[in-house]
Image 1 (cartoon, rainbow, N blue to C red):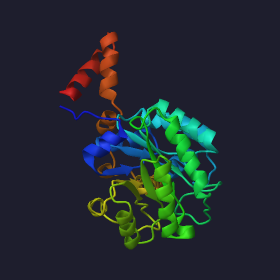
Image 2: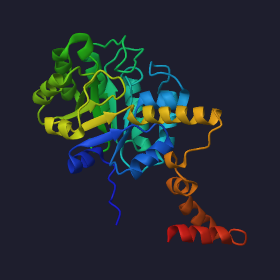
Image 3: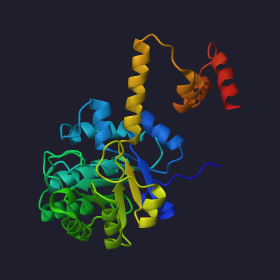
Length: 305
């Protein structure tokens, strides 16, 4: 029997203790994440903006566009999802609106950062942060606007460490927890020593670490090591995107050179049909139509056997 999927972020954390959260940049990647056995995932701004609009994560795409893209992704998977909400897209009323929209869409968790607009990827140069009191007000607005603590899990991210040092980042996180955040997330830690200090400072608190592979500023540590330190969530915003991008480049180069597809490095038609749920749709179609689709029915039954 398939494992029952619980969309409550708090319940999933309680059950699994540590969540690896690859980023889905489209509906297909969300399906593949679920098929791979992950229990939750994220929709990160970096991957979404690159894959859907072909632009860098430098505040070019805002809530209007993202709130239309996110439903397309999360409908493709039954897993609970964490959505990157950048800086909340404005002041406290914008934050409240963002919370209401995503909660109604079925988003399980969000994170909001304390960057000053125009915000950018946390591993890029040129960041600035707002005063901590301003961010705390946004978090209060977010916490009061959600239906309940169980309906939406709120993560407070600070980008202060690189600008003002780890002590300032940790002070901000204490303030953000008092304002209503359910977890803290210090972006772009520079060393394993920093991670250990954060873990020690926030014992018993849900903590997020960003494993930005492919050129990020934070050290790479295994999921087991991160969990042993006391972190409960690890984000992987670039891992899937960067590997998919390289695969696409290599594929297009081979195609341009006139080389046939290496079937060992590609899925088959049958495998792809299974990924996009063709058997389910074909079965539904044949239940309500007859005649020419009789052959399709036989193929589907064979696939489901």
